[in-house]
Amino acid sequence: MNKDRFEKLIAVFKSQSLSKDEKEQMLKSIRYAIAADDLKKETSQKISIFSRFFSLQIVANRKVFAALSLMVLVLSSAGISKAAEQSLPGDFLYSVKTSINEKIKTSLASTPQQKARVASELTIKRLDEAEVLLEHGKLDEDKKEVITKNLEKHNEEVKKRIAEVGGDKNISAATDLDDQLDLSLKEHLKVLDKLAEENEDLVQTESAEDVKNSEDSEKKPEQSKRDFKPGHSRKVIKELQQRAERSSHRGVDRAEE
Amino acid sequence: MNDSDFEKIYNEHADPIFRYCFFRVSSREVAKDLTQEAFIRTWRSFEKGQQILNVKAFLYKVATNLVIDYYRKHKEVSLDLLKEKGFDFVNEGRQAPDFLDLELVSREIQKLPEKYQQVVSMRYIEDMSPKDIADIVGVSENSASVLIHRGIKMLKKNLNVEDLDEQR
Image (cartoon, rainbow over all chains, first blue to last red; front, top):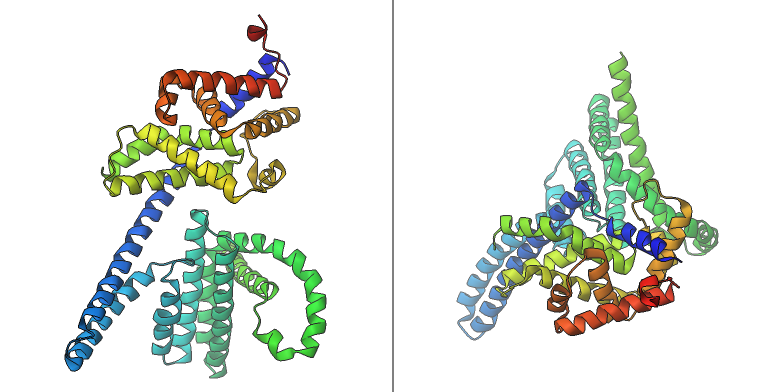
């Protein structure tokens, strides 16, 4: 290699820089990461204050201690629960968000129509989370799996509840619920495409495994039902994509009319 | 340090730190991650009240540690893998053979001992003075000059660069 060539190649390295968008995006991600850290710190401080309180009071009057502990626990739980709302897959408060906060929300919905609405909201919430993670380049396989698992669960719930609403002869309410979800999904086509696209790696390995699993599932049908199947989840993503696209086409059709 | 001070520091140093990481890891995506992390860690150090007299030097030190950690954690990283992950130079108007040569240069850079990789990238990519490099690396200006000279010589030798200046 001659010297000029070498200098030219070094110049290529020198010319590398972040695009304006990349730079802005990175600054956003940095700010987000710092804010998330602050939140985590704040929450763990609350937990540590509570544990210190707990250890000091263990020797004190038991009734007073029990009452005060309960009060602190309730107050701390409210704070944690509020903090958990901002959490994302991978954060330590995320399970509080999905297993406690959202379960309470779901259980507060009394009619099938309300239940369908809550499940639809949770579907969109999961996609919002995926978008934030994607934006910050943190949508890795583990987080994707958590999100798709939850999407699968919410999607089943939506379908079940909409069917119940329709079954009660309230066809127009069922169609409205269906349409509303389609419309909301339309805004998340990009992240759905990303989830689908990244899932393709899994599909390759799955197809070979599917053959094997189908033989196994004949032997152990109960177990195969319980296990999480990435391929199945991919179907969920595809289903949601189709819903979103259906809504887009509907929009175009309406515009043409 | 407030948010706007941090933004100023970010705007001033984001590109050089990114280039430094990119020169060291040859993957745009990995370099972006490392750059981002370098700024997050710098902010945390400010928050903890650490006195940082030379932000630029501090950022390079953090970035260097991140690059070292990256290779430690990804011992199996090969250029083939990096290519899959995004060995992506901005390639406007560049011909295919350029990429082969760029890969070759990347490979040879990564083969250099760590101490040379650092100084060669600072000298070659950011045109830093030996004094600035000495501040960042934490050696005397003289030692920095020696490291730069040896590093560049080794890189050129490995790439069979005909260096007319040196032959004279």
